[in-house]
Amino acid sequence: MVRVLFVCLGNICRSPTAEGVFRKLLTDEGVANKVETDSAGTHAYHVGEPPDHRTIQAAAYRNIDLSQIRGRQATLEDFKNFDYILAMDEQNKHHLLELAPQTLSQKVRLFMEFSSNYSEIEVPDPYWGGASGFDRVLDMIEDAALGLLDEIRTRYPL
Image 1 (cartoon, rainbow, N blue to C red):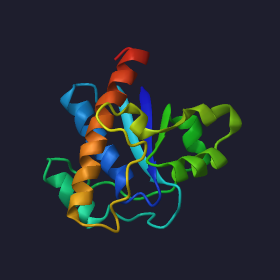
Image 2 (image 1 turned 135 degrees about the vertical axis):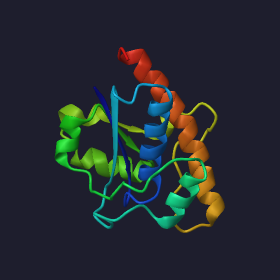
Image 3 (image 1 turned 30 degrees about the horizontal axis):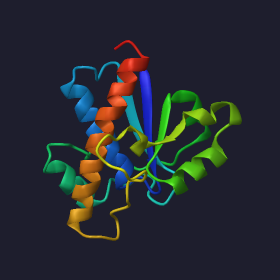
Image 4 (image 1 turned 60 degrees about the horizontal axis):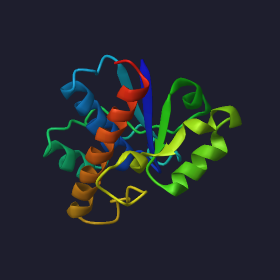
């Protein structure tokens, strides 16, 4: 089983979107039983809360269900339990690297490294913007999710 953790600041916009998008992709590709996905925040601002209502709504328009996701904070255990720990931006990557045991820090990467259609290295935080920001985040995440699945298929027998 390959395990992937998506991480943003509060775990209510970008990382739950990535979790939901990737989970749907895994299901559509018939490999949901071989890859596990989760999301977390680097900060405990929204532990136990559902994703932002705008995040849920934007994802629902694309038939992606985020309703069961609840915010949680990334932990030291995550570095032992996950093969990929993917930050949405440089700031959260930095926070993760501060938390990571040095021997496991290579698991921390930027999620947009897997994108083939965007030059941006960060998924922008849509929280303070309008609805179009949530749609753009979904577009970026869908693209990077495809690249991530390609890499996983290359590295692991699915």
